[in-house]
Amino acid sequence: MTGGTRGAKSGTTTRAKAAAAARGAGGRPLVVTDPHALRAALDELRRKGRSIAFVPTMGALHEGHLELVRHARAVAGVVVVSIFVNPTQFGPHEDLARYPRDLDGDVRLLATVPADFVLFPPVESVYPPGHATTVHVAGLGDGLCGPHRPGHFDGVATVVAKLFSMVGPCTAVFGRKDFQQLQVIRRMAADLDLPVRVVGRPTVREPDGLAMSSRNRYLSPGDRLRATALVEGLRAAAAAFGSGERDPAAIEQTIRERLAGRVDRIDYVFVGDPGTLQPWPGAVPPGRTAVAAIAAFVGTTRLIDNVELGAETI
Ligand code: AMP
Image (tube, rainbow, N blue to C red; front, side):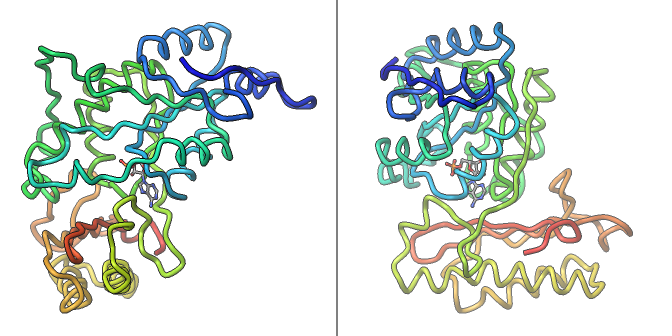
């Protein structure tokens, strides 16, 4: 581990004092590179009765991530954030090499929440030579992003299972922005009986509605303007649903009309069952919500966004 400890401010609760004591100098989170050292420290805190909340990320943090960390802070005494750009969830022609990395900036941001621990493991400690186990969640990963990013959800499920094991029993906080990922992880945690409560939190957006994403920094000013087509499509879908439209094909067409001429390529527009991520054979069943989800390229940047129609405002 790196970093020292910091005394707690007077007047804070015992829980907050214990968390603050775990933090590094100046209130910065303690950066831990060794997963076993983290697990030992967290086991010790759990023995003392502390609850743990965990936010897995790939870094290049923005306000969307910080909202998850704030929620983690609100529900548990000790907050752990992982920063790991997981190579196994990137395809051979994807942006692994250029994915933004800024540990110092991330740690500075996390000190403002604050988080207590940052798990920043080297790739070889997550995937030591000889590693041979992959977690595959059948069904939920097959549609939407699945066909466009072969192997992606296996990479996600595998690394998240490993991160859950490194952290141990906890509440894990994810963003609904990656809605399919959230459903895959919920299923994986339930199926593997992992001692983790998975929580999904609302998508944090820029003032013009664009969903925050580490990848938004790839966008040129012109692309940034065009990128709002996604949220405009979802808003049109929400308006149609609100007016009683229940034909998924009609809602998808409404979205496509908003994307036309503004994005460079559409991977998918999907309206279907938020639980199974399958389309319905006909109309949205009475009383049910529907997820509307988009993946599209603006320039060379692949953006995703979604809204749960009938459950979320956008
Ligand atoms: P990433 O670093 O992109 O892998 O994302 C880490 C976590 O942050 C995931 O649970 C994401 O769903 C979540 N996240 C990313 N962007 C947002 C956002 N705009 N609002 C809420 N959560 C987000």
